[in-house]
Length: 368
Ligand SMILES: Cc1cc2nc3c(=O)[nH]c(=O)nc-3n(C[C@H](O)[C@H](O)[C@H](O)COP(=O)(O)OP(=O)(O)OC[C@H]3O[C@@H](n4cnc5c(N)ncnc54)[C@H](O)[C@@H]3O)c2cc1C
Image (cartoon, rainbow, N blue to C red; front, side):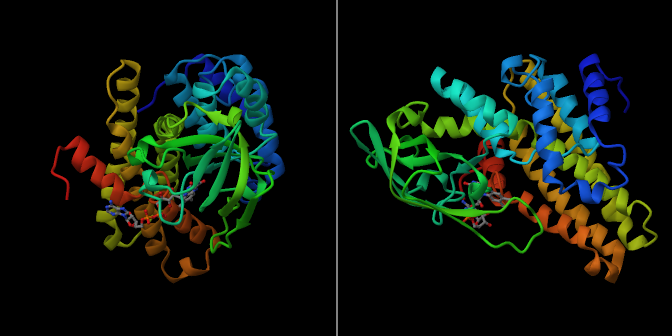
């Protein structure tokens, strides 16, 4: 299917061409990891209003509609635009701050975040509370005009390079699990915070960390949203990224499919055909979700998009490795793609949990 680009999407495409170095595609394998270029890209995109295209100018946008914003994201992904160096900032923390922040919080935090001057980490998961986010045990106890925080977070991506963290902690131990959680804006430089990077097997530059919190004092003014209302802050913050995450998966799937399209092994044909169909189903479902959103209907597609996108991505790179044969073991890029695709079925809700949600909430099946 070919559709003509609307004016804002064309403008973005021209801006991107102008921004990228002349030899960008020729030397993409190096540029992909070039943190200086990625930082410059974020700053320039903020100045030009492409960071959050639906937001107003002062918040890194152009007040565009959701459809244009989605097409811009698709263009960026199709043309392998530099990846934002700290995705959790603009795509997860920022929507939460905009929706729930006080004017003072928005004033202080939003622009440095969107320009990439201050990085953000997402403090949700704990050693015993990953899929079961509501079971988190980190506690924030009120003590005058501050909270005293004790606990332990894990898988906190880029915490070692971040200034701030949206920290979810239990503020009412007696309330039902998901009603006693609050979101605090934690300054990671505060006394009592210890950040320890976790060594990774993968080549990714998005290092996981553990964050240990020992009697950390967080001012009450740093509460994001209502006290004990952290569950809704988490849902709203993640909603924005969930609307768009399928695009990244779809473009990666297309890239993986291109790498196997020429396969001469008939043993791969059935899986290749099935993957081509799933990629198209993903795209069509993504557009259906957008239409539902634009017309104010519910968007139950989000969980299907997450599951289908991440599982298909994994299958694509598995097929690519099968098509390459023994040579695949020495191919560092392919190894990275396969490891990265494994992560896609875990973050933002594991495939098993997505299947539970689809079964129970969308299909109305009884709880297992
Ligand atoms: C690349 C990446 C980046 C991440 N970044 C962050 C971050 O910045 N901040 C953050 O807070 N977290 C982050 N995470 C953590 C992520 O949110 C958790 O890994 C995820 O929620 C799963 O939790 P867990 O690892 O504790 O696994 P568990 O919840 O312990 O699950 C273990 C296994 O049990 C299965 N399982 C669990 N519950 C059920 C159930 N009810 N039914 C069936 N099967 C079940 C799971 O599917 C999984 O296979 C990141 C993860 C990845 C991979």
